[in-house]
Length: 85
Image 1 (cartoon, rainbow, N blue to C red):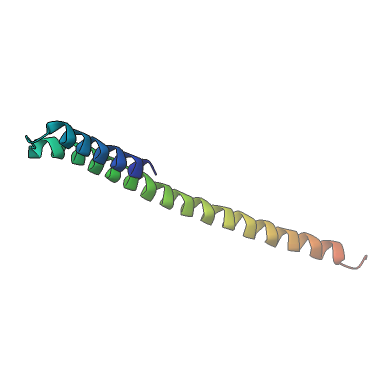
Image 2: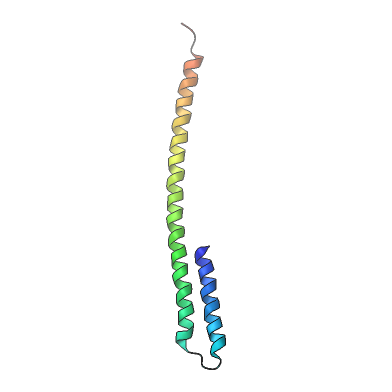
């Protein structure tokens, strides 16, 4: 969402600069806003990709812990259900 917000802000800046330029529209006016939009988009994508991999890593770790907990619980239940000697 950060990247999208930056993209919108950059495009607003580009259109604002273009509107204020009147008939003297120059490519450099637009390129500043577009540059801002692209940098924030890339930053948002990088953060999103890192967060996606971190999330999947943590989910895998939690699933391992849950599996071990279930296995140990079953072992304990088997001990409780053994007939008395």
